[in-house]
Image (cartoon, rainbow, N blue to C red; front, side, top):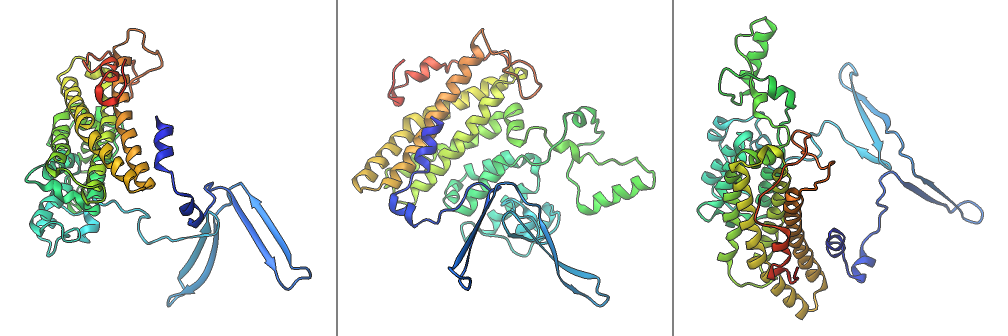
Length: 397
């Protein structure tokens, strides 16, 4: 199934392949080809190297009143020029400090900001203020932002690519990591809260003076396995309920063409939901959830969303495939078939997880990612046999 998905997702027409510039995909392999027009016989030399070369440093300029500033050029990864001092190479789309140009922003900074990003004019400054306020509290941002987009028809904002990037980052960025040993030793005497830069400096200064009466419990706001797994483990409804409402917004779109603006939105939601279902399968295998209310809630929401994908979204994608076939549009058909493969894989993985967890002869090496223990049994009614016989899959057990 994975091979089929990758094959369909990367398929391209022969004409497009000829027009596309081909590059070596191996980052550690570099090649060189030179021509010498002045030499007799027009000599040609070629070289090939498969071992990574170390970065090359070169001082190109010394400046400043006391000549204490040097401009250094660093080259690596096949003569690629590396730039330092320009910030991170990749900026998170939910980094409020970038959106507001304020270091370590808090909710007060958002409320007192003179202007707000409107994401290409998609939302008003008032709603942007609400969204950015939710992003200033990373530990609880996941349920807050999901509920924001799931209420008052705000799912329509996700038609914009900029807000799609924000949505994915909110869900899948793990945020602050905290080792399990640190969490076990933590004994906060006050409710952990995110500190401002000034408050953090004051506490550090008091610690340097030997005053430990005030402690920084910000580490308690981190997680060991990321925010999404943490929420699915302790409060699955806070994440899956708004996500299910956003998924069901597909019904409000109604029949549309594959070439309309609705198609990218539907495919985006399908990809996000299937990825979240994959995280849910991991959590369901943790023995600490065995027999708990969280496990029942998680399984119920997963079953509901997967059934919606199979009975509602899948027919829409098949109809779009037929439309692409009528227009002799092979690339569009390949994209749609790949998303159908994603849905089938989500169904298969959930059924397989349920079957493996409920089987009395589990693999002894199938351990829990949360504690390293053997996985417990799952009593989910969504078994492999019922999934395999689902009429939407087109197969029978």
